[in-house]
Image 1 (cartoon, rainbow, N blue to C red):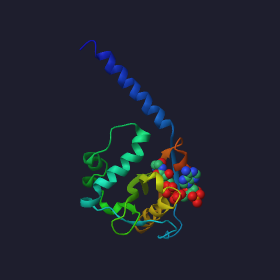
Image 2 (cartoon, helix red, strand yellow):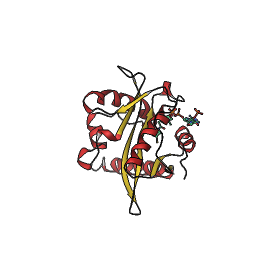
Image 3 (cartoon, rainbow, N blue to C red):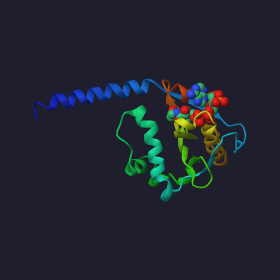
Length: 183
Ligand SMILES: CC(C)(COP(=O)(O)OP(=O)(O)OC[C@H]1O[C@@H](n2cnc3c(N)ncnc32)[C@H](O)[C@@H]1OP(=O)(O)O)[C@@H](O)C(=O)NCCC(=O)NCCS
């Protein structure tokens, strides 16, 4: 016990430093919607809502392919999905959009989820896990997904939408700024 205690303390301290480093790099970008967003932009994909029975595996594969590179963590499993998108806290599949390469039997090429949060007593939309497969980037997939998310926000009466990312994720920052999100 005595000999593993310093190791545990060291690991906890190291983890704390890593978390602090990450938090320092978090950047919050906001957009205020001025009118109902148009859905059906120039993207080359087909967007629909998540279907819990058939889409789980493909979603996990896309998520792991993109974020394991960033997070260096173990791959997500179904239980991680269930923890993140918790039905008991009001999350429902109509708050997630998937982009496919073709309308029928297409490959999953992108995804985004919406959470509702509150700041200063006002509710706002929060963009969660925006992800596009590397070979499908710069084709308007994320733009199409965000059109759906923002349109849903508008229908829910959420005019303010928040994107949180790391300032070291330059592609995400460039994308959100291009969409009119500002610090
Ligand atoms: C960020 C990300 C979602 C963008 O997806 P995408 O489908 O390539 O984005 P779009 O094609 O809709 O891009 C729209 C515009 O955003 C900007 N943009 C997108 N990616 C960019 C990049 N890598 N560099 C500079 N600008 C970029 C451009 O202005 C682009 O328009 P253009 O291609 O006509 O120049 C994608 O790169 C990705 O999945 N990255 C890894 C995961 C991630 O960072 N997610 C966000 C987490 S918060």
